Amino acid sequence: MPSMIITGAAHGLGKCIAEHAAQAGYKVGVLDLVLEQAQKVAEDIGGVALAADVNDPSSVEEAFAKFDETPDVLINNAGILRTGLLMEHSLEDFRRVIDINLSSVFIVAQIAARRMKEARRGCIINMSSVNGINPSTNCGAYATAKAGVLALTRQMSMEWGEFNIRVNSIAPGFIDAGMQAPFFENPQVRELRSNAVPLKRLGSAADVAECALFLASDKAAYISGENITVDGGVIHSVLMQLPRS
Ligand SMILES: NC(=O)c1ccc[n+]([C@@H]2O[C@H](COP(=O)([O-])OP(=O)(O)OC[C@H]3O[C@@H](n4cnc5c(N)ncnc54)[C@H](O)[C@@H]3O)[C@@H](O)[C@H]2O)c1
Image (cartoon, rainbow, N blue to C red; front, side, top):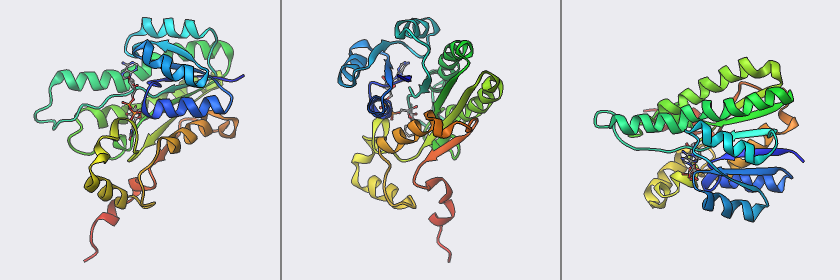
């Protein structure tokens, strides 16, 4: 049975990836901050609940030990958003977003990769964002952290390829789930954003989960150091937003 640890899997995109992975036959490690929240998801899908703070290496080590096997796949999905314009943003919020979205990817991936190196196989998928490619305003350090995830993914793929570890990232766009769901409750925002997407709809958590499962599978056996945007094409649409005359 293939196995997968997903961070931030008690809610939103991580929870959906956990459900899809369990359906696809993976033993799933549902890793999140609070054990009870991880347990709820783990019970539903027949997975293993793992409590850890992705920013705390010792708690992550304990979670991997509890999982009791080297996972075939790690999905670094945990993340937070602290909104704010840079002019007023606090250093504390800036650092927190870098810690949880970027430094955590280094912390958890390093712990996984040391085990995967021994096993001579592994796959790591890091969650970035379209914000890491095209920054928007009012998102503090988020775009910077997610751009860092893209760079770190490429560097990991360079250093760890020789151990048969593939490393890729996913950059979701306007997804109607998780941290962005409350934002899309406003009908005007929903309509404006949906219309800006070439596919004329918001994305779903399942759209992201299916991409993660593809990258995790042998169908992606020769893909490493790559980023896939799951955004209905919005990243390419900037010229479409401007009138021709
Ligand atoms: N929802 C979107 O539209 C969207 C778009 C682009 C990128 N993303 C990225 O996808 C990932 C998942 O986002 P989401 O929307 O599902 O968010 P979410 O807030 O619904 O879920 C994030 C999960 O991460 C967990 N988490 C937070 N800090 C943690 C920590 N220190 N240790 C362990 N777990 C922690 C939370 O408890 C939560 O369960 C994030 O990296 C986010 O930046 C989301």
